[in-house]
Length: 389
Ligand SMILES: [Zn+2]
Image (tube, rainbow, N blue to C red; front, side, top):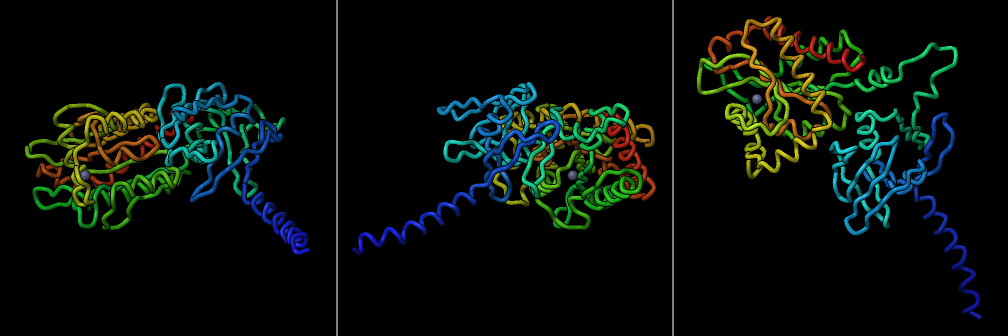
């Protein structure tokens, strides 16, 4: 008798458990052009949401091509070929490499991408606009299209998209706290100059532009490089500006220059990058030396942003050249750690040489620092215009 009774108790418990398990398995709705329902895709939730690439590929009709041996996946979206690899944060779109904030996860033979990073990179690459809504758990593809009403005259969607995109600037005042940066001939500390210029710049942007600014530090505190770039990525920055002041042995060296990441082997640029990277000693890192391989990987990861980084760097130089009685040293490339982690167009500006007594004096004047901030502000203004054109 007992044997017959037992299953009666077990069966409802089993039912209840399977309902619970089913509820735990989350999905996200994929909506098409006019908000029409395309399908539901599996998602995973850790600290962030991940989307099943396999499901997404099926839903948008392109399928996903998985090589189970190499764990590489190819999917097609808007005629773009997108390559992903298991446990790798890099994503290749039409042979351009981008870096997501997190790696591709494999779970139960399905592959999952971090949703926010994935769609952000797609829009940076120029794919149609997508919007993600976690309250309704839905992803709308081409969401801008549904907002265009018939009575409205033709709206340039590319312009709309770019305006929408360029909404947050990360300003990174170099050094801080226990890391003074370079020390000038008269004892000026780089960390004070960079913070002041960064604050002035943020104020000008807040006052005049509809763009949010986030400072990686707004007081004299020490901050690890990786925390600066993580903040930039977490806050979805569209432009990362790291501000520094230069210093070399030769006290005659002067002028301003703007760097983007690159594999350049120019001796002077390498020396300056080495000095800026020396902060890693304070972070307890084993080596402050970037290997060639590190630099190539980082440059590749940034290649998707190279054009915009260079455009912005050139504008900074141009605007400073207009206002400052100082030498224009041009746009350069070097391996700066702080330019490695931020997944957005990014530059490092060396405002001037505090090792040069004359230039140190200028950098110590608030009107000169204001001119520096004004120059960067105008570079942003022009950059924004380029994006919207
Ligand atoms: Zn510096």
